[in-house]
Amino acid sequence: MSDNSIQRALLPDNPDANVLQTKPSQGAKRFRRCRSAPRSETDEKPQENGSSLPAKELFSVVRPSFRLVGFLLFLYLLAGVIVFYLVMDQLSGKRTNRVLDALYFCIVTMTSVGYGDLVPNTDTTKLLACVFVFTGMAIIALFVSKSADYLVEKQEVLFFKALHMNMKCGEAKMLRQIETNKTKYKFYTAALLLVTAIVVGTVFLWKVEKLSLVDSFYCVCATITTLGYGDKSFSSQLGRTFAVFWIITSTIILALFFMYLAEIYTERRQKMLAKWVLTRRVTTMDLEAADLDSDRKVG
Image (cartoon, rainbow, N blue to C red; front, side, top):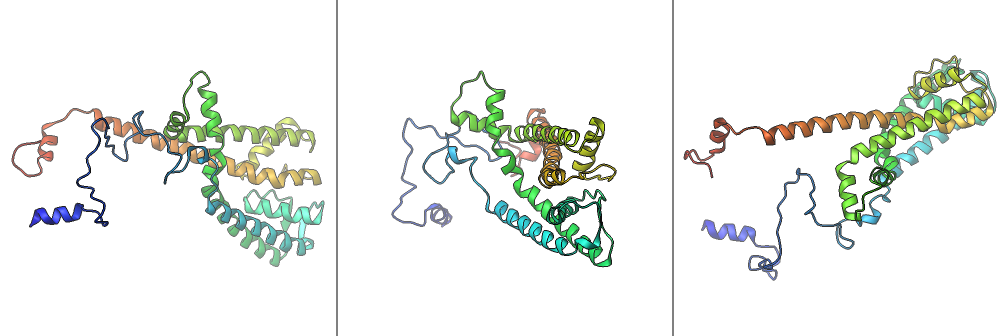
């Protein structure tokens, strides 16, 4: 009776497909691999047709969640520009262009930089700033979490080719190597983007805002870390136009950099733990624990 129940459980739902009677070909090799085991050279190559994603489209997928968060960010900035444009007379500080200043104040509030060059001076604007800073930080957190892979994935293939210029390998091997060192390549890319953002911001403040080189670097560091002392900031119309794009980009890149740094540390600890488990000597306690049926034998 138990044999029949086991056989019925193994039979497929379609009675025409006689899976139990199908035998693998004599020359075919069958591999069984644990889900947590690293990929090896014996793994199958990515299929161009089938349920898996084609290899050439692996880095061209835009996640719907990322598009949704991007749309929410656009709505937030649009609402912020309209609201702060209407109450601009209730903000104190140096002004350049009414629309640009509204967008600039919205970006500075959302990223929690808070230079202090534009500040609310009425109860209405203070309450609006409180609402927009909490909403903006939530959107930024969602944007970072959803766009992390998308912002860096495009550069992974270039990093692999740059680090392995003298190696000739096929697309399948390249994808396996990228998947194995995925976090490392993302960290390298985030580090490169962070250095680029720091250099670009420093040069812009030095050449356009006419700050000294030390003050320019000081202002860049205070901005991307959202420290925002406020003694140095973007004061010209061109500078605030640049800051609208640069501030949000550089703060997100810095968040990605520290996120991948923590991920690399966690991944290294996991690999060390797995290596210790696989290489340690088997003890009598391990053999006793493996004797599940208590017959004093381990198969």
